[in-house]
Length: 292
Image (cartoon, rainbow, N blue to C red):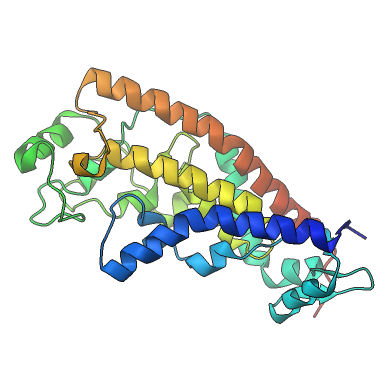
């Protein structure tokens, strides 16, 4: 039997999680209702596929039994089961049904954790996404240095993006300038903990394991991703001053030094979250699985 939580304890955790997350989802819903787009804050809801309503939903994680009448509400969702002690996640069923996702997530995160962070990219992936482009992704926001100035930064700096899901948005003219050729097939080989997108993606891997991921861990991953996204866009070529985001001018030595300092801090903040997700995947890899 796992850890048994009395109803008063787990409902308090559930309500605290919902309140924490609604500080992010509430403003997003309000902007959406007004038809407004925010290039920083909406990214985690538009680029990633986890719906706000799913983020607000609390799950205890494996090995936790929920006591009380309210626990039976969880039986309407797949992969929960009722036991004599209460309601809990069916670890064996999750391990069986999500085997490929568990395996890939474990391999990717373990490989990433084994590498030292590389900190010399200076966020130039966002610059490569608008290099010699007639249209830019965030068309409502001007380029700080204009098109020619932005192109000059790309042409005079070493572009070394290792993250496929950033590289795939490079303009065709920018891709040959990158030192690496990331592909989906090379993802496990190339991802490294200094990459901002790798830190943001911890949120993705947390929800790929939903409903097994403890919701407090998922919220921690989301919080980190949001803070990393702010750095990502402050170091981008866009002028977001009207939104209160002062630029980190990576075209200067001072800006690059500040970027590296912040990048290193985020790599350190991401490490325990990655370790927790690795341990979570190991729970299911070690679980005995019988044929369904």
